[in-house]
Image 1 (cartoon, rainbow, N blue to C red):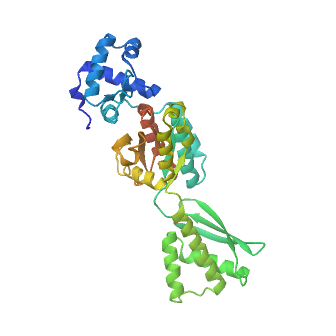
Image 2 (tube, helix red, strand yellow; image 1 turned 45 degrees about the horizontal axis):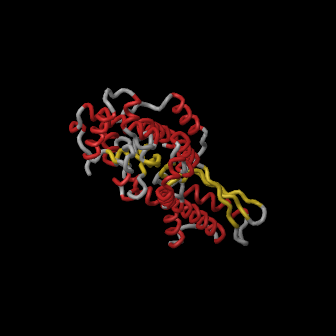
Length: 347
């Protein structure tokens, strides 16, 4: 059922509806008329409140999970609340300081991505997610350091400052000159290219015999680039942290739902496809429950925001996933602030 415009609700109904939703989001439990009356702010008897609750239920904005139980917002009710009634500001100064400080301690891009996911989980009490940027490392410098035992340490520096090391087994015929020759070739011919473009150029030059590399040096160049290209292609598309936080006390009454959500999180590609819908969003997006096929069975919600590089280009998406009773007013600005901070750190 599509959410009703706020104008369809009387001022009294809006007040009661807001209080039901905010109380439910804070407690995770259905809200009854007597509790609303005891909370104050509604100058009505429990009987009058029950009448309004019944009207809201008839409109599809509230539901009663059990006979004689209180009401809780439906997916349509939550959508109306977040679209038309949600008040958002900025994260608290303390939360902003934590986000900035923890991200600044990350020396490499991969560390910053991991830390952003952990930060979102720690501050939200839900699971944090970060999509890995869709971009290949561009070579800036390469070196090979001979080690004992017929091995060498390959060191690659990307244009973004990221440093990656790999251990390579040396061919039996490899002499120290082969390592120097291979490193010189890569630095002279491949710097400024992505790994994929570098691998294609090497393949062409070797096929057309346009290089003077000896057999050992050719082997080192080919195997080194192949390993890095494979590693880049096999990196997870999504980093998820804090799944255990989804097993809180309210989850014990609905373990099947939580188990399904954890299974969904294991299927990272499906979650990444969902987050990808927020890639072109101008602002933070909220996906609630059955609005999305992926979470139709789990009643979960996702708050997601794109993060950008210094040129304003979207390079990824991050967010939190948890039950639909997430604290949207607090988490929407937190996700947005983390996205902007991460973009400044790695962009």
